[in-house]
Amino acid sequence: MNIKPGAKSKVSPLFALVAVAISGGMFISQASAVIINPGQSAAPTGSGTFSGTIIDNETGTLNSGTFIASLHSEVYQQSNGWLDFVYQLSNVVTGGDSIETLSISSYNDLFLNVDDSLVAGGVAPSQMSRSALDVSSDDTLNFTFNSGLAPGSTSDLLVVQTHATSFYEGTASAIDELPANVQAPVPVPEPATVAIAGFTLCTLGLRRRKAVGK
Image (cartoon, rainbow, N blue to C red; front, top):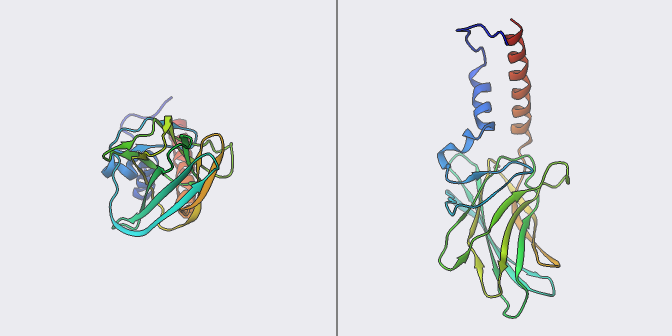
């Protein structure tokens, strides 16, 4: 590679800003959470945070026939318009099965910071994961409890920070051997942001190729 010493970058401030966002700088002010991209997984740290004004608060029931659970969901709007989603799963019926996974649909085309926030008596997930893009058109976020969420127990708060600015009713599934579904708030993808990000990556790649060729 023959990049000239001292050569200055000609990347515009807008491109630089979006590039930083893509690399994770978008959430640098709340770095306690874990950035999860499609196909990735991570262990929770118990440092999940959320902020803003609560704009949605709802609870739904999940009944698989082998367990009955409730999912409480809240949506918070930050001062810049971005949304934080908070979920808490409770396995409410004594004598039922333990719940292995909480799966939440429709997190396509979004930058995600994900973690759990410790609560008294809460059960922490052992793993957080996101489906790969080639698995399904529906990008799913999963919280797995390796020892199971036993009957009568409640999860930690499950926090998802996004750059989405709107939400709708998607689907959450609690899974043992059989799944049980309930509606829950999920973010609306931000296609404009994704398009800008893709354009920026292409532009940066072209500029880099030109610089290398000089």
